[in-house]
Image (cartoon, rainbow, N blue to C red; front, side, top):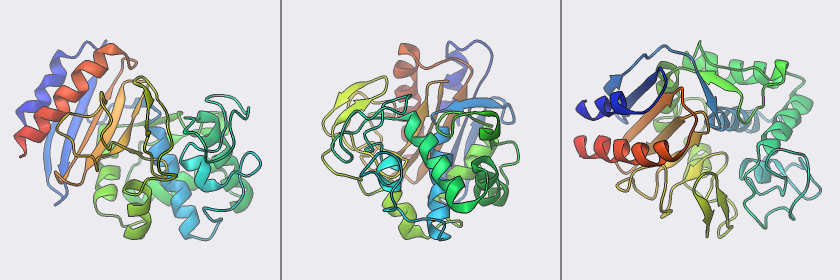
Amino acid sequence: MQSLRMIEDWPVPHAAAAVVRGSDGALLGAHGPQEHLFPLASVTKLLSAYAVLVAVEEGVFELDDPAGPAGSTVRHLLAHTSGLAFDEHRVMAEPGNRRLYSNAGFDVLASALEDASGIRFDQYAAEAVFQPLGMHATLINTAHRAPAGAGGLSTVADLVRFAAELQSPKLLDPATLRAATREVAFPGTSGVLPGFGHRRPNDWGLGFEIRDHKSPHWTGTANSPATFGHFGQSGTFLWVDPAADLACVALTDRDFGPWAAEVWPRLSDAVLAENA
């Protein structure tokens, strides 16, 4: 894919890698070091959310079980509506009223899963998600205090395996995945989309951001409203566009900033155009 060569011109210190996969299983293009280990930052939330959803299906706990602040549930924490602050265990709002993007909320999720299962979160995620998908380089090292919402490490080669799961789930019931990625949790909730400002509404599923009609956005202008995924402050993103039957992953070693808000949408639009 010629469009992926655009990453050669990105202003990153050393490494950038990208991959595109079709929903039919075809690897449509790859560029850059596919096995290079990158910090994921908030792309970690997709992996952690998936582990939580597997735990729900395994009966470890339920989406509407209490977790976090009074009145909050596992569902609230996944959807960033628990009321917890961004990076501290301080209550800022009543559960369900505001989309307060919260790393702290994912740490609470990890603790809730550990309490309910008796298994360390990083071990649960590895056994429930990474190992079955062959993501052997990926880890969330919560045993050494890496945050469950931002402390993951992975490669493009591993994340395209995860993208394949998002396009055709084997670990989750398709209805569970659809609810997490296509159905807005707590519709109409407004809040800040990190790096892009306040959005009314700020649509989110269960751990997955839903693009809807947000503008500007880190995906492309040609991405459909059904696009879901996440980006990370370490200069990383993963999106799946069901309307285009495509998934795209890009990882870099430069923190998110204006450069990324400029070049990421261009890459996404080029990828979509090349595969139209």
